Amino acid sequence: MVTMIMDGDDALNKLEFDFFLKGNTSLDAVEAKKPADFISDNGWKDMQKLETLGESWTGIIDNFTKNKKAWKEWYDLESPEQSEIPCGYTEKLSKFQVLLLMRVLRPDRVVNAIKNFIIEKMND
Picture 1 (cartoon, helix red, strand yellow):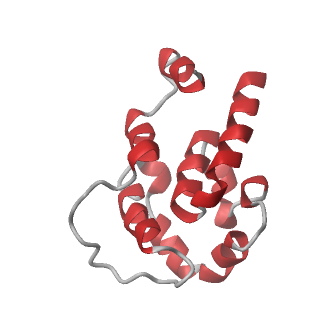
Picture 2: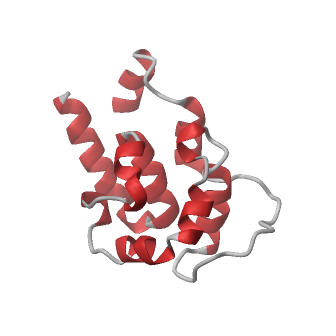
């Protein structure tokens, strides 16, 4: 319902929404070597697609690769969806875009992140 309202308000990026629902649907193998063991193979494949989704995502792979320690610390948090995202991404990303990042790096926390997103959107 929230995404339908956002769509009606022209506040929903359809490419990002499609990515959130499906991830990287390409059948091509990822050529770039995964820079960290803590990210899953699917997460790494999804990150390749994420970087192509617009200006907010430009350089995310380079940033992740250069700042693995900060990303690992965030990744290891019990509730990363309630914490600051490394390297200024909390300010750089919209609340919906945070869901995409959560889908890529911590899919186990997506449900909680969605709850937070809905609560915040309904309070706007």
